[in-house]
Image (cartoon, rainbow, N blue to C red):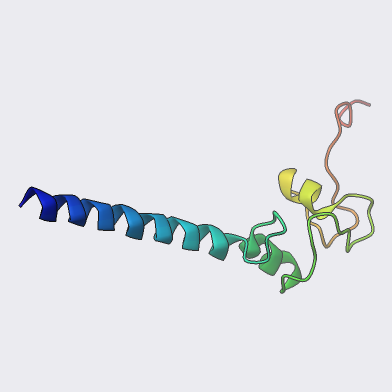
Length: 86
C-alpha cells in the first residue's frame, strides 16, 4: 500500500511540474521575455521582441512593459524623477 501511495505522489509531482511548465510556455510562447497577453493586447501578434521599439519613441518594449506604458503610442513614455517639478 505504501508503494502505491508513493507512486501516486510521484505521479502527482510529475503532472504538477508539467502543468507549471506548460503555463510558463503559454505565457511567453515566443520566449522574448514579454508576456504573450501583453503583446497581443498592444500589437495583436507576437512578432515584436523585448528590445524592439515599434512606436519609435526610444523606449524598448521591455522597458514599456516594466513601466506600464503603451508600446504602440510614441507619446506614452516612462515618467522620470523630477517630471512633476515645475
